[in-house]
Image: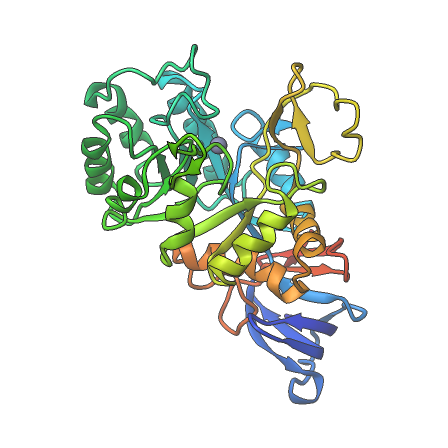
Length: 379
Ligand SMILES: [Zn+2]
């Protein structure tokens, strides 16, 4: 048995100062104010020294960590993310893989998980393959831009059906509905996401009854339809903002290049605190930081100077979002742990509560991760 003392416990909507958390066999047994929780006889005492102690972070969307692909180096990247407080992750597989590439990548991750080398693996985030090639998906070389055919995707569904939690689609792709139906039959609990798309709000809303609940990297790689030359139309972003059931993923980098800080505040105001999910969406890229962007140390650029995903881990995203929006530490944990857990239906993760898995992290007021406990064990 273990007990964390002198904790500022981060609950889902408030703080418990001078708190204690009793951990038994990997689970939270009790938590609350020191005067209400006795230190069990023989328990190992961990002094939090007043730090915030909240639920481990859950990154539902990232391709890489430490500039390495998750599917190529699952064990190393898993460990790196854990050190940054990410106790749950959905590795994302992108359209840039061909059919064999997708299957092999999924296989590699699943094998690492089954061998006990990917303890924070929760499931897979399928970003594609059927996205709109005109929106950040390589118009020329996209191997998935042709007709959507069962013979191309059935092996993919079959490979990931026990692990896929989120599947991204571009609703405007011709033939996507049959694909969505087939995914839904194979994986009844799947959550769909709208991604890399110029769909109309009506095209997006058509898939809400199928379980579309996420706007993937909201306001990034989405189209803007112009009704007339000087009149802005409505598109994916408006559908995500408008529909209360849809969660908005946000990439919050230090300079606010993916999403302008003003837009981050606007989205928070529109979507409310229950529908924001921070993601890292890290991508492997080795291009130099372009002149004038020296502060963009948490973004990866390609050699043409284009943004090529982030270099974030979720703890840094939380710190950035606190700066850009003025949200509290409690809110940051909500956007990076509670909301992802709720979205995915993970009932014993995402909050500090008796009976939950003891995935806990300690952070300071700037969201620097100081200590990580994974299923009751210190890293
Ligand atoms: Zn993407």
